[in-house]
Figure 1 (cartoon, rainbow, N blue to C red):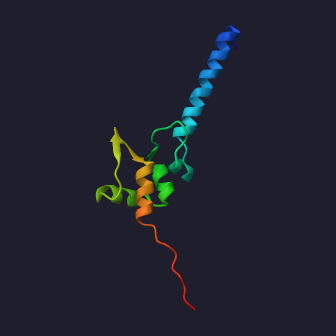
Figure 2: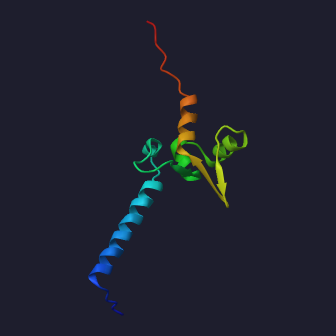
Figure 3: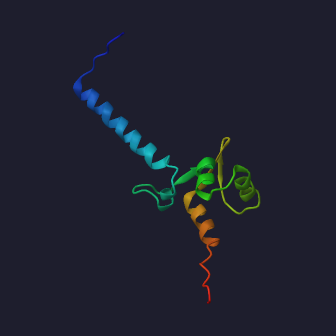
Length: 104
């Protein structure tokens, strides 16, 4: 086993950078409905296919249909597709149905 030594100041800087990376990954990589509310400090949350499927509780094929017929806007970068959390929230709000009042 090889042992590498560094100054304590450099070690603390390294730990600080790792914590910053962890914070960024946590803020952008969260696959939870709370992401629709946005995180403090993020301008816009982007979701990949898996996150969007999870939030909408639909299959990947249904999500593809939403893209194909223009129901849900998206952005494609390379082979990866992303959706704005705000667009998913708009989609859900458009299909919101108030509870029906029952008359007895």
